[in-house]
Length: 77
Image (cartoon, rainbow, N blue to C red; front, side):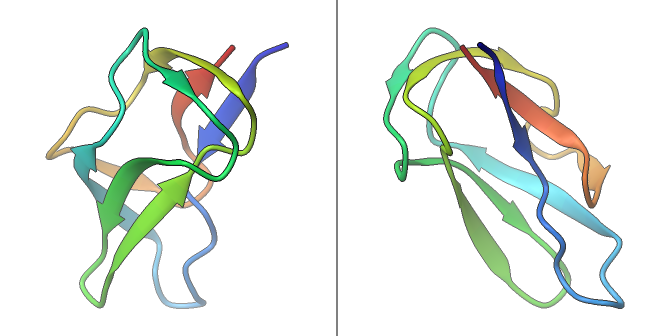
């Protein structure tokens, strides 16, 4: 079953974030709680953890791209 990696709610005034670094690459095995991607806003950087064990099968937002809160960054299968 696929698990989406989402941009979390970052506060009332923050509506978008930039993908700073993908720590995991497509094809990498990841474990729940492991950092897979780092995003940043105008106020802070945030490490996003995998919410499930599996393989990072897809990256939907590349490094340097802006995305909205709630958007799918990648997929773990």
